[in-house]
Every structure is written in structure tokens, then in C-alpha cells.
Image (cartoon, rainbow, N blue to C red; front, top):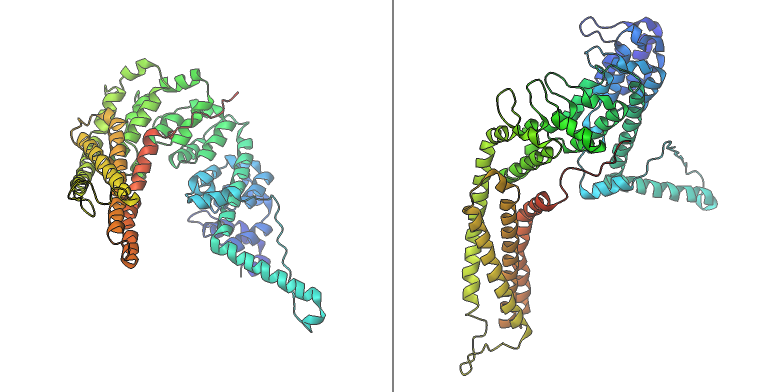
Length: 508
């Protein structure tokens, strides 16, 4: 129908709607009718997409980027670079069309998916050759046709297997990421030689808010001066990255030398808030939801505050904003409820684990004096003293008793802590790590002691012993499934390499 109408009159290609000021190609791209868009783009004169003709070319470029059609967008940019500086019909610039999913930092892949992503190699030009084989006549008399049939079958099997494993989907994602970076590079080359920043500032702030580190990095590479420009509301870009808790974008300042980092720490916004004041504000809810437990959330906030302290001069710690508050006072005020929630979370977790640890202590202490097989009436020594399984029982029982005692002591230390702000940085997480680790060891060794005792007593009844020992591994597995991810997250957060990348190469 579209083709018929265009053949009847090409004038309709340039007639916008009265309500939204949108031409047919913009309406089709807004609704993601890409087959219609491709046709309309092939018949639309390039002059109709020029900036002097209105916002239609910029709008088309915006929707191409929004719809992740980067190949056509790149062609449009190459034909008319000035579209980068042109506003669309909705008042946005084309750079604002980039979404987080257009970059690798904006997607979440599982470990095996990341491995596949890194292994996939994307060629710039990929040819898709399809061979259609018709089976006519006697196959036995035509070896070539038989060979092509086998090849076609194997290709189909390979294609189905790649689809089943999700490799094709990951390949498409990586190809889109490569194309988006290429398009972004060309757009940054256009803005590199301009002096204004109205066409790039809104998109950059939006990218920082959404954590688009590739976008922010490319723009700052092209326009380093943007880092020093402040707005009335958000301050400069680094202030906004701290406020939004975007650690990867904040880490870009390590490209600068120490003197320039200090200048960023000394800069203030219209409310006289320094970078350290921004770190004293409460993190956005969406960032906190990705962290397990209020105690770890409080730890992350303290890590941010301590990190930003390193880029400014010591006197910044005593500087006040327009409300008369120092950075630490602002931090304390904004995180008062989080400290209470962290204390409650720590105490509830410690109380639950203390009960479990105390039960294990009781059981293991009693098991040490009610050993399997009993004692020799004359000597008092255990009857199975020289059996290897008995020694395994004794060692496992002792380890379970000692580790559960250590666990209970650690959790008691948590219950009696003062819960000051600084305690959430290292002290409390360390006690929780030790407590959970030793509790896991005590449960595992308790199951080993039980299995050893059972095997000593009824080793001849294997049909009972083997299933029972297998079931003994269930509590250990359940503990690993429920508590081990928290233990790993807490260890990485406390003793890992940290969320900030200080090894970013310095800019010349």
C-alpha cells in the first residue's frame, strides 16, 4: 500500500502530521516498521533530510539509534554529519537516542554467556551464502547432489544447535555493540571540532545516569573540556557520576594527573556542594537494590565516601555547603536510617546463626563421649580406636566443635558491637565472614562425623549406609545454595579489588 501511494505521488513523503510534525518515515520508524522505513528511506530525497529542511533528518537518525539500526544510522551520518547538531521534532538531539543495551556495560550476561561473548569474533563483512539443493532423479547416480545434501543437513544441524544454545543471540548482541561503537566514534569525530555543548551535554548526563561508560568515555575523549563545565542543577559530570554512584564512569578521572583530580575535588556546584558532599548523599534506590542486605549497602556507601576523600585536599572535609553542613555531617544525616537497617539486619542474621551454632556445639560435645562401639571395659579406650574411620570420626567431631564455637563467638561479637558508621566498612563484615565460614565448616564436618559413625556401626548393610550418607550431603548443599552467595559477595566487597579502577591509562 505504501509503495502504491508513493508511486502515485512522491509529495506525500514530505508532508508532516499537524499534531506531532512527523513525516511518514518518522511515523514508521517510531512504530518500528523497519521494512516500511527501509523502503521510504530508499525513495526519500536526501535534501528532505537536511537540517535546513527541518527536524526530520535528525528525527530519523534519532529513531534509527533508538531502534539499534546502527548500520543505516552510520550511512546517514556519513552523508550528512550536520544532523548531529540538529534537534528532532521532540526537542532531543540524536546523541540522546543511545540506550544502555547498545553497549556491553548495559547488558547482564551469565558467566558462560560472557565467555561465549568474548570468544565470538565479528567480521566487518559477513556473507551469507545459501545453497538450495533440489533432489531430482537418482541420488545414487549423482554423488555431487548427495554431498550437497549431507552438507546442507550438517549446516542445518549446526544452525539449530547454535540457536538452541543461544550463541546466535549473543552474536547478534555483540555485533550490535560493535556497530554502536563505530557509529558513536563517527559522531564524536563530528563533535570534536565544535565549541558548543548544548547538543552533547543532555545526552552525556543521561548516559551517566544510566551507567553508559562507553558513551561517556568516547564523548570525553572527543571533548575533554566537558569535564570542567558545570550546570546549575547537576554540577559537573564527575559530581553527577558520584551522585548517581556510577563507579566505572567515576574511574575515568584516573586518566587525569593528580593535580587535575584535586581540582575536581575542589570544585563546587551552585549550592556550594563539593564532590565529597555528593558522596555524602544517599545512593539512588536502583543502585542499592543490587546489593544484598542493608549492612553491605552501608559498606558500599562508606567505600564511596572514602574513595572521593582521596581526590580532594584535606581542608575539603571541613568545608560547608549552603546548609552549613560538612560532608561527614551530610553523610551522617542521610544515612541515619541505613545504619539502623544495617544494625537490624546484622543482629537478625547473627541471632539465627548463633542458634544453629549452639545446637552443633551441644551435639558435637555429646558425640565425643558417646563414641560408636563404646569403650573397652578394662582399659577404657574406644573399641574401634585403631580403625581409620574412627579417627575420621574423632577429627571431624573436633573440627565441628571448634569451628562452631568460633562461629558462635563471632556472632556474639556482632551482637555486642557498637554499630558506628566506620564499623560497617571492615569490622562487622569481617566478623560476619568468619562466622559464616566457620559455621559452614562445622555443618560439613558434623555430616562427616555422622557418616563415619554410621559406616562403622552398620558397614555391612550398604543398602542403608550409602543412601543415608548421600542424604547427609543435603544440609551442606542447602547451606551453600542459600548462604554461600552472600558469603562470597561479602568477601569480595570487603577484601576484593574494589569497584573503582585506578589503573586507567593516563591521558597525555
